[in-house]
Image (cartoon, rainbow, N blue to C red; front, side, top):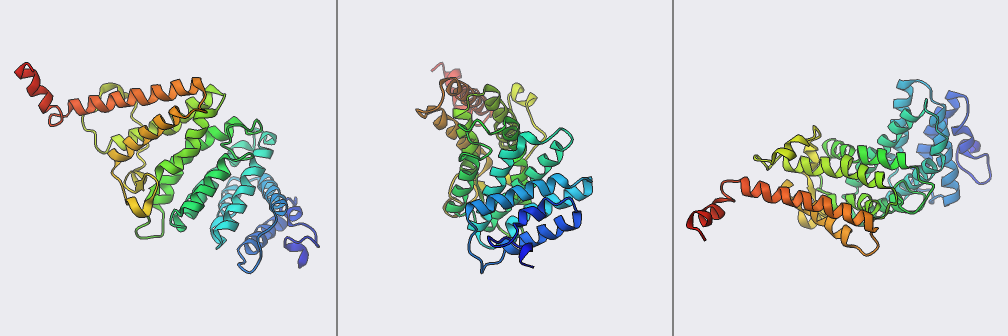
Length: 331
C-alpha cells in the first residue's frame, strides 16, 4: 500500500513507526528497511529523513520488554548495513543522531537504559559500515562530521547536546570499535584509522566549556586506550601505571589499526599507535582555538604519559645499557 512507504503524497511512515500497535510498528520497520535499501530510489530530502528518524525514535520508545527491545535495537541499527549506498546509510545515521540529540532530554529514567543500548547498537553498526566501505576517507570524514556538526552528539558548541550522551559515547566507543573489528566478515579487513576516529573526541576535549566532559573523555576513552596499547609491549611498567591498568584490552584494535591511511600505512604496532595518540593529543592542545583551561589539562595528560614512556625505556635493560655504561665511566 502507498501509505506503508514514505511518500510526499501519502501518509508519512513516521506515523506508523510511532503507532501504539506493535504489529503496525514491526511492519513499519520492515517497510522502512526495504524502502531505504532500494537502490532504484533517489535519496530522501533531509526533511523527510528527519520525520522518519523521529518515527524510529518513538517506535523504540514504545517497545516495552527487554528481549523485544534488544531485537528491535539490532534490527533498527542494522538498517545502516542493509542499505547498499554509503551516502544513504550516512543520511540515515545523521537523521538518527539529530533526532536522538533533539529528543534525548525527554527520555525518563525507566527508558534511559534501553536508549543507551540503542546508541551502542548504532555505534557498532556504524563501525561495521565503515569496515564494509574499506575505511574510505570520504566516508569516514562524513561520519566524523555527523558526530561533530550541530545536532551531532559530539558537537562542542551546540548547547542542546546532552552531556550524558557524549559521556556514553566516550564509555562505549572503543569497545564497539573493537567488537566490530573482531566480528568483521572480511578475512583481512583494512586496519582502522585510529587517529581519524579519535578526532571528534579530541576536538570536543579541546573546545568543551565543561571540565567534566574533558575529564570523562580522558578517563573513559584515552586512558584505557593508551593502557591497552602498552600492555602488549611494556613488560616493566612503572608502578603508578600498573595501578591504572584497565581490564579492557581492545585486542582486535591493538593488532588491526593504523594512524590515518589504511591502504598506505597497513597495520601499525601498538607501541607506534600509542605514540601516535600522544602526538595527536599534543597537536590538539597546541591548536590556537583550544580553550586555555583545556590546553593545560591536555598538555598535563601528554606530559605524564611521555614521562612514563621515558621511565619504561629506562627500566628496559637494553634501552638503559648505554646510560648505565656512561654512569659507570663517570661520563
